[in-house]
Amino acid sequence: MWDEKSRKYYRRRASSKDTLYAAKIVDGIDDFDVNVYIYDAAEEGHQGLPSELNKMNAMLQGTTKWAGHLCTTVSTIEEYDYVEKLAAEVAGGEEELRKRPLFWTVYNYIGTLQLNRFNSWLLRASIKYHWPIMPAVTAAAPLMGPAMAAGNTAISHAGILFMTALKQFHDPGAAVVPNNIVFSLDPMTGRGGAHVPHFMLGTCAMNQLWHELYGLPTAQYGGTFAASLDQQAFNLARYLTLQVISGTDFIFEQCGGEAFDPALIPICAEIARMGRTLMSTFHQIYPTPENLALDVAKEVGAKGEKWMTHKYNLDRLKMFPSGFCLDTDAFDTWLGKGARSWVYDLCREKLKELEKHEPKPLPKDVVERMNAIVKEGNEKLRVRVG
Image (tube, rainbow, N blue to C red; front, side, top):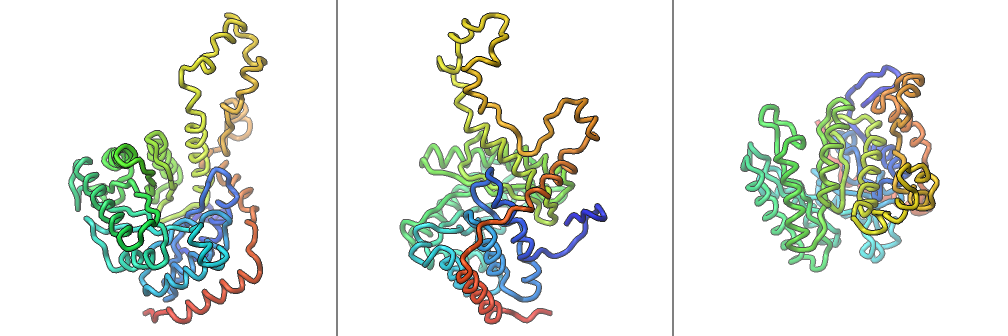
């Protein structure tokens, strides 16, 4: 975590309070359609408490948006029964929750097509409660999978087909959106390889397979490993820009797993705005009569002095959207203001503004019932540690 007073990073276990903090901020950013948790509730898990129950309670109370991902637990499969009760309270009953799910479940495999005990619990719970799923089937190349992206993509694709068929067999009609991740590691360090061509080419190939063969949407759940803030910004921008232009339908901006600087939230919002505005205005490049504006060009003439005030341009100023918190001042103005860094100064400044947002609160009686569910779950599922 980043400490503003000492201006240093320090290490501690994340808790559901951190989840709530991040969820509230993301709830207030229009560039994000949904809210995906930033932290795992490691502190609660270290205390022997059901970490996913506490995490999802924070998510469901901290955002009015879709609450993102329910992940694996190491306590017991019963933990998901309590999560279902929480979501039903927010949705207004189990029937309403079926109509409008508040989260989906994720399957991240360790090694080639390995469905471990914890992922099996999550799959069984998704079938029991008809939760939508976003399966990711990965082989960590080159350590546990082929070094060439085509071979690794084939493994991921085959695994997702299997998971989709398995889910539909036991839970017909449930929503499944494939995760396009084709995973790789840096063979020299063992860290996630989202920065290498293997990873990026594989996700693009997965998009083509699911879009062109089946006409179905894809999701992305890649991101960046923990590093300095500027390096994480670079990794995210490079990888996610490719996701945007290759047509990924649901793009998730995942921050570093081992460290988190809250300034990553406005950084991710800037990347999200870039992607949204790029694709929402993409039609302007098509050489149509309207876009070419040849008649207007003849009217304006060779000097071009009237372009800025012409109705044609004034009606289309939305094609030039502002950034989220980028510094777009002229160079001398930027110097005069102290030559502030976007990553380390402006994004942290923007964060303070975002921290003021408070999501629309749930009804008091709903919160009381949710707190009672968490209390009961903590007491029943708590395990002895140490």
